[in-house]
Amino acid sequence: MSDRPRIVIAAGCGINCEEELAAAWELAGADPEIVLLSDLLARAHPLAGAQAFCLPGGFSFGDDLGSGMVLACRLRHRRTGAGERFADHLRRFLERGGFVLGICNGFQVLVKMGALPNLAGTWTQEVTLAANASRRFENRWCHLRTNPDTPASWVAGLGRLELPVRHGEGRLLARDAAVLAEIRRRGLDFLHYTDEEGRPTATYPANPNGSEGAIAGLVDPSGRIIGLMPHPEAFLHSTLHPDWAGRRRRGAADDARPADGLRFFLAMRQAMAESTPLHFPANVEPCSEAAEAISARSLEVSA
Image 1 (cartoon, rainbow, N blue to C red):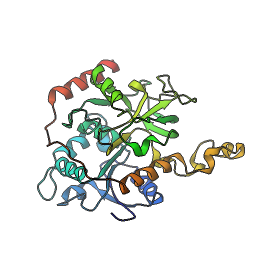
Image 2 (cartoon, rainbow, N blue to C red):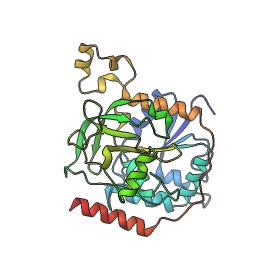
Image 3 (cartoon, rainbow, N blue to C red):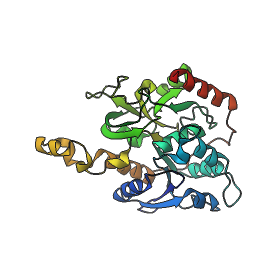
Image 4 (cartoon, rainbow, N blue to C red):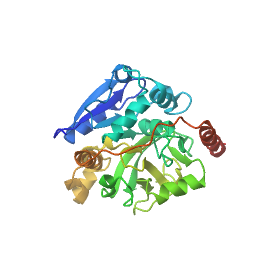
């Protein structure tokens, strides 16, 4: 593996955070490549030579049919230039040690593809990201904390973070109580919204969208697929924090270390350097009954 891992970043079709994400990876010591989705899917081997595939934030396909839904269907069913379904290509990419990152809209896409949390290993949708409980777009900074028991050990040590959220549909809802319990049991809820003392909370606005379990991000059981609603690429330098001047005057310890968003990317780059191939189960078609149950749960809570 190169000392500077190659990162493929999807763009186009309403995605709008690709430049910020590329800047984050450059600062973390990687070589990002921004590729239009149409060009990416036309390639015979879209992720050849890459160590990570990233889906940035934005409003892909205008959030028609629900945030991330159209792009999730396209990535699951469209075929590459070699005639292989992109979802199958993505599985093989993961098998050889690749990573997948989805931020905000990218997280919504991975959830609706069934890639997260993927409890059953079948890429069947088990959770959704529904309209915020506040019933409005949320654009605010949040206190966060990583789960020390997550299988993504590279992120567990980040501890407390502050990052902004910018979304209208970020309320994580599980298909049922059993799914939520299993997510917690396996530590797949790698990131939580917290109060100022670092305690997970359901209280608005510290929990900006009403997510169950205060969940702000998920990983799959391998720790290789990761998605989160907050934007780490939006906090790459201390001066990007809304209270940066006050923090500097107070001599805040956080001001002397890399900004929290950059710490996230540095940790992920280190994980890529240490990664080894894994085995994933054969592809399984999405379960229509599960998708219907998720949709019903979303409507029930939104009513």
